[in-house]
Length: 349
Ligand code: AMP
Ligand code: MG
Image 1 (cartoon, rainbow, N blue to C red):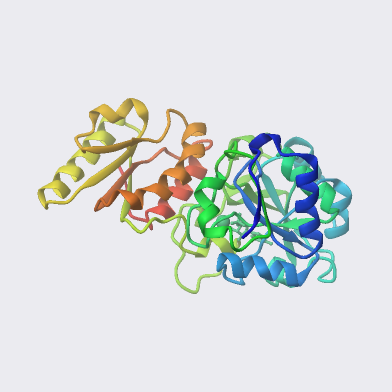
Image 2: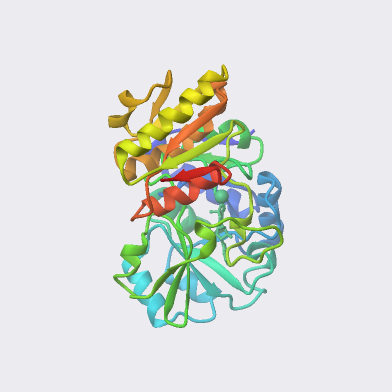
């Protein structure tokens, strides 16, 4: 069982020091970041990083993001930092942006971290506890989202303690994650930004740095079997509850609500039950007996969605219908997670 610091935002220095010592000792620490919780290990220690894959049941071809606390750490790991990357770092770090760089050498960041790729994803978190943990550990920390592979990422310790407490040495509880969705993952090539995974830093914000920003086809498209993808994480079943889920979206609110009610009544006629996840202001319009508020705006929805997805299996319903949010700004990241939670079962009208 892990040592557990549950001081929420008032974690003591000495507790972070103890957790950092566990990282130095080659053990795993569950820690908060502004995006979601992470399960961290010393990114320079192959044996320690292997423990992450085991704890999560993560496929070994799915690379990890390396978390750093200063530019010196970055310079030690990567081959070069281009002008565009420098501008992105200036604008968005510390913060929820992961940049894929060419790795300097496998002798520094081992193959197990990058899944054998010659590139490495790096991010500088802004969360104070995460920052201090890396500073005190004095090494970059490789950390994927804190969840057993396939499940929604952990955005507070209560949601994940049961599935992870026996797998880590120390838990730092920093309360609810500010953002609630994982970082935006990008690669800069030929003076162009490719979004491999959308997140809190939006396409619109990236366009303020470089005009040419592309969204990888797999962000909203289905990955076919044996297809090669630029971000290996996109291949895997992710975020999906056991209960069948579907997403319904239309730019016209009434159309969306009518469609959700139409599906609800069809399902009810079969003697089955529906749970609707919708915006607060729409809930009274739904005929379903069970309905949950997902939030009023994109920031709130991002913050709530993983916790809600984790709870739906306890409701014993036959179908969960989730309101879509469109693809603008943070909507792209939420939609990317929702269509995976629904295993591509969605209707856009
Ligand atoms: P997670 O650790 O759960 O936040 O997932 C990390 C995401 O970053 C996964 O989707 C990975 O595929 C992606 N990623 C990490 N490193 C690389 C890399 N070197 N190249 C491409 N994608 C990467
Ligand atoms: Mg993850």
